[in-house]
Length: 395
Image (cartoon, rainbow, N blue to C red; front, side, top):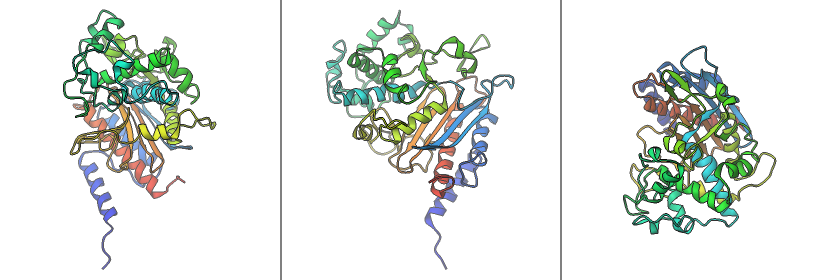
């Protein structure tokens, strides 16, 4: 009697677990609407988000693209389009703008990863901060707290930054991963000082324009509000086009931790740039391949169920009970998520990326919308991995 295939057994168990969690199981394994639509639409039906945009692809092609639902829970609001709908991508700003800017500046010799933060920001003088380096900011091992709830209440942006400079580590730097917006705010400030211009100006010229990301920007104009997914309510009216993150809002809408708005199609161009190891679609090299590899390789992990971090990027394992990367993406996979309901995951060994943008922060109807969204993210990632492994519509 032929022994059962261990791989098939593992897959069967994963499918059963997804079914038990209430997430539809996509079949067959293909890059098509039959695979992805039931998964993404499930999140809308259970009230986790009113709409979503999904793009799945490889370094040189888009394998699937789809828009689901509407900008709000009203069917009269605009339908979601992966090419046109703007999303506040929240903490994905950390990898698209801040991390990529620092990769470019590292290649140009303007920053060094193991320099102390004080070398760039002399005002960073809190007790115990002398050991904190740029590398520690990027892999979230600085020991700084996850954030500072007082920042939105500062008198102005300058006062908010003074509070950031006064931050002190909660644990010994280099001993633990604590995901922190303070790390990203400081990293964005280093990029500003090293480049000699604002983060939004540098990112626009050096990253967004070369990659053809014409829909991506900080502080979108009011003319774009109608096609922007709202992330909040004010007296019953949807709020769209204003950064949802309160710290980034206090900093004027441009910050190392949040502030970018983008479309799924634009972010696909960014993912392809990363998979091409720093080369644009027209063959121009923006970042050295070795630098991309350095930033997207595990830099910090303390074992067990803790999360792993690259430089700027989250790595697998994610340290989550329900991983946004699913259960099938490879050990070298990396990505990032945003509080508003956005995510990007890249599996370099499969030459595969998955971008799922939602506005789960907008009036969710689900009891635990973030948990439900993570289940959908994981199911979509697993479906993409299975389709890639099956060779359907792939290479």
